[in-house]
Length: 326
Image 1 (cartoon, rainbow, N blue to C red):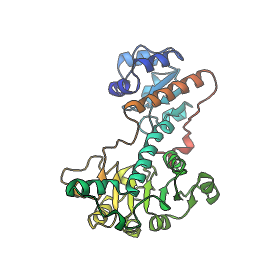
Image 2: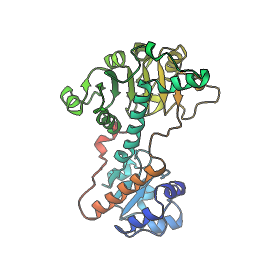
Image 3: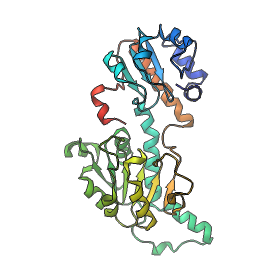
Image 4: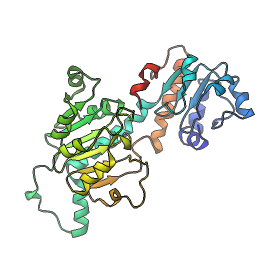
């Protein structure tokens, strides 16, 4: 991983914990695996702990690592560095994606409840007018009682969001083409098709990975079908949503949007979404940050310990599932 990622995710106490379950190489972070020093270390390595900034583990790298048997990723997606050469060599792969999903789900829950109560808009109006609004005249669309929340994709994050919503008086709809009605009910949601979800939900939260089949999945027709005043939350990838269509819809004042991701990741300074009062853009902060990095390190240490004990990974990544993973 990059030295910056290593310093963030594996401070000294985390490295100490890792060193208790394996013989830790003398360098805690390598983001260039082609140097003489890297090749010297790789020659003895059985397990690589990777993170943000890891270069591709291609055939050239693997040739320098004849004993490598496993990769433990202390972050989410492994697409950027686990190559076909790894799978062809039979290298086992683990990811902390489940651990990274937790803060994303917590962010989503917070936004669902805040936007159901229209907290941010009403706080802004309160600051501007210095007067309370006429709360007895508020429309019945304000509040979280028996509102309808639509979840797009029963991913790790999507499932956790559904779980976190259980204590609240909300109807939860789910669209996922790989989940049955019975499975959705077991999760605590009602399966509907995608147009129905957008048309019936007071708030829609996107949790689908960005794949060729999901690029632009949320297009103009779905956005136009949303109820006036409904909210769209996107914490997955910006390109899952047709951003031009979304810009038109929010500028018209039809819906609200909470965007932790955009396409590109940082919008140009003059992009109209920056100035839409009904749009909140956050800097891709929903995933693990600050003290939440400890969870990633703890997950990686636990996975190394399990593998070393011969118990297998608790969070394996299967090659046959790659087409469905972020």
